Image (cartoon, rainbow, N blue to C red; front, side):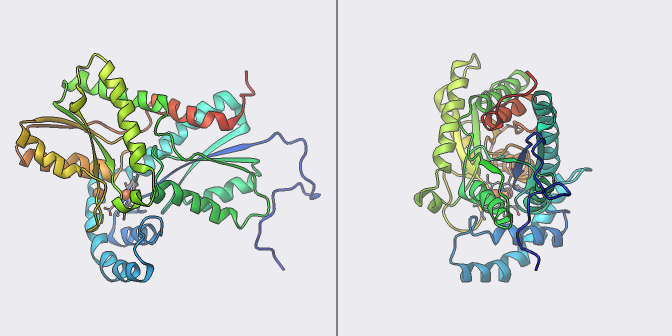
Length: 354
Ligand SMILES: C=CC1=C(C)c2cc3[nH]c(cc4nc(cc5[nH]c(cc1n2)c(C)c5CCC(=O)O)C(CCC(=O)O)=C4C)c(C)c3C=C
Ligand SMILES: [Fe+2]
Ligand SMILES: [Fe+2]
């Protein structure tokens, strides 16, 4: 009978290859996007995403009735229209940017580790799936797998959910390589410096805004009460970034850099203050010029390219604001790749090319 466990790759005589130099595989992951900006593809994507018990913790039966009875009937058409506004020739921005990050990381790693460390990327929902990429690593007979979810701030719905997907696949393997799961890098000094650099570049081009809004993806407030550290990690990122910006010559004062939370989904209370409400109130306090950035997104995606650039600028301008700028995510900037490399480096061992 065929075992449900897959065996480690062996030579044709079924002996392990003792001369083979060891191979480490780095897996960069992000959330994922629909395969196409169509209602049916978005429905498929949202079904997988919103069925994840890490993302929605409403009692199962009630949630499945709401999800299948209401949300998956209404939201896919609405979301597909939004995806169409950000879709590019090479597909969903989140996926093409993650692919570019992977290419640059592979080049950097190859220059330091030769062929002993390989790099690939996968998406938690949709494609390329975590399962398919892990299986590719298995066929290559890797000795170590390092997983780096590209969410700077650990959160249950993102980071822990990625861990679930990785471990679900590994449960089927007979030989488990050494595994490193990197769970957060919200306070990595190179990441904070790269964020500060984007603000400096922005101010050099467009001048200093009256407020710099750091808008993080939101999460139900209840998750925080149950112990999810995401809010605290966002706060730490904010404080560290603020520290660098206040000691720079940009001229910011403490109260000019504010933290908000966006992308609320459903009727429950989410982390506050909400980005849209904040932007609506700022003009009433005489603030007419803002710049907004989202340190929680390692790559631009629907939530930045549509929600921050379009939806929220309308909120601010309609409330009387005059100048609204979005500062892009770190994407495949060299200083971002360097920061991610710094996060990975302790798990990769010493370079064999020195
Ligand atoms: C339903 C609850 C949601 C939780 C909790 C949540 C947490 C969360 N999400 C991200 C990062 C991303 N989310 C993105 C899109 C997105 N998020 C939700 C819902 C929750 N997110 C939905 C329904 C969607 C889909 C878009 C839509 O239909 O409106 C994305 C962008 C994906 C893309 O294709 O570009 C990212 C990235 C984090 C970091 C987080 C927890 C803190
Ligand atoms: Fe989300
Ligand atoms: Fe959104």
